Image 1 (cartoon, rainbow, N blue to C red):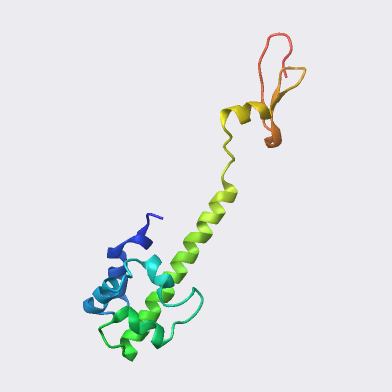
Image 2 (cartoon, rainbow, N blue to C red; image 1 turned 120 degrees about the horizontal axis):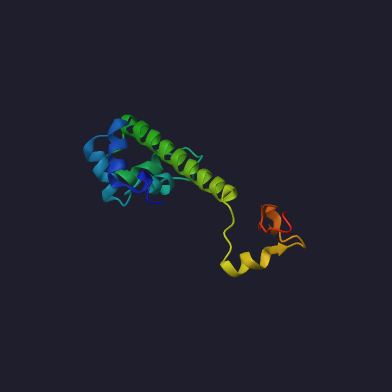
Length: 136
């Protein structure tokens, strides 16, 4: 992805913003949760609320309490939302992107009519070859 979702610093920054302590943020990274993208899947599937039993391994050896549990649940919710949004954006970009053919395929899709006009297959765009005697 190469975005803030993959950044350790972004994870720690968001952790502090949702009221986790610096020690709790460091516990996440010590336990292998090194990005928001990893956190989105670390405790449960996106769209599910993690239980306290699912949260405790993320903060070990720090003891889970109602305050840090609430902050961690919020952080997980934000991470899941960001990951889902990024996937949605990527999926929409692929639908809107023009198809790039290899040069030989592109040439095979071109058709020239009797007037010298070239059509680009399904795109229905015309490339006009200007000649003195038979304009398109």
